[in-house]
Length: 247
Image 1 (spheres, one colour):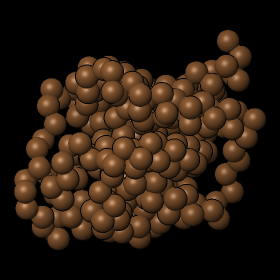
Image 2: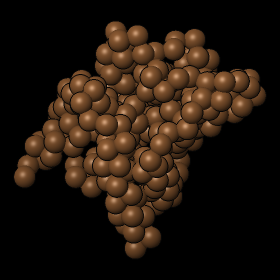
Image 3: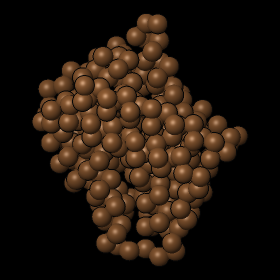
C-alpha cells in the first residue's frame, strides 16, 4: 500500500473520530504520521496541530448549524488555555523524541480508558471559576506539548466544570480544541520542522471529509458503541507507542 493511500485512509479515520465524538482524532493522527508515513515525533505533533485546527473548525460548523455549541462557555474555557498552549508548544520542540513518544503514549492510554467508560459524567449544575481556569489551562498545556486537541479531556470537563449539557458538549469541545490548537501551532512557528506536504495535505483533506461523515455517523450509531471502538483502538496505539519508545 502506497504512502498516499495510507495517508488518505488514516486521515479519514481520524476525521470520523473527531466529527463523531469531538475527540480522538489527533491522538490517532500523531501515531499514523509517525508509523505509517515516516514523520519524526516533532514533525508529527506539529502536523497534527494543522489537522486538529482545520478538522475541528470543519466539524464545529456542522455542530453550530445544529445549535449544539455553547459559545460563551467554550470561549471562556479556551481562554484559560491559550497561554499554556503557546508556552508548551514552544517547549515541545526541545523534548527528546523518546520522551515525547512516551508522553503521547500515556495520553493515548488515558484517552482510550476514558472512551471505554460506559457512560459520560453528567453536569454538576454549578460552575467554579477556579476549576474552569485550571481545567482550561491543563487542556491548553496538553495541546501545546503533544499536538493533540484534547477533546477527550474537554468533553468531561465541560460537562462537570462548566455544566454544559451533553447535547452541546461535543460541539463546544470542538471550539476549545480549535482555539487551543491554533495558539499551540503559533507557538511552534519558529521551530525548524520539515512537514511533508505531499502526504500531509491528502491526510488533511481526508480528515476534513471524515469529520463531516463522523457527524452523520453520530446520529445513526450510539455514542457508547463509537466510544468503545475508538477507545480500544487508542489503547492498542498506546501500547505500541510505549513499546517502541522503550525498546
